[in-house]
Amino acid sequence: MRLWSVHPKYLDVRGLTACWREGLLAQAVLLGKTRGYRNHPQLVRFRAQRDPVAAVQMFLSAIVAEAQARGYNFDARKIVLHKPRVCMTVARGQLAFEWEHLRAKLKQRDPARLKALPAKPRAHPMFKVVAGGIEAWEKV
Image: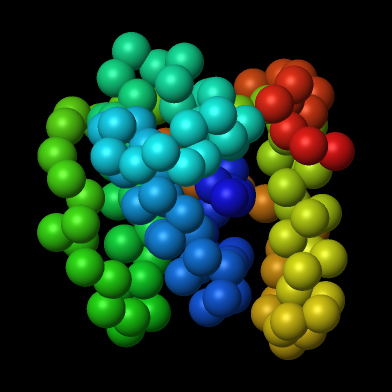
């Protein structure tokens, strides 16, 4: 499961689709509708929120918006609830780690997209970038 902190506009079609599926899985986990992945480290930051389900739904909303901008048909009705806006933080080191991880994937899957990437990423719209390193939950 990879719930990207980088802006979804940087993801290739495989990455965007996987992020959508994995976000829906995260939503199911947080709603208690699945037995698998309950202890996945990527869920730590969502569980730390006052309303974890609203946080993952905000995350998914940006994925849907990017998919729609590209002409893809992700079913927004799969986002179960529609809560007020949620803002989370992401450490600058975590964002940089994910950026390099994405760049390595794109080198293999989509070299043209890799060449078009800027030097530094923007974060997913729901994240505010703060000082700090790679998150403790990240598998390095």
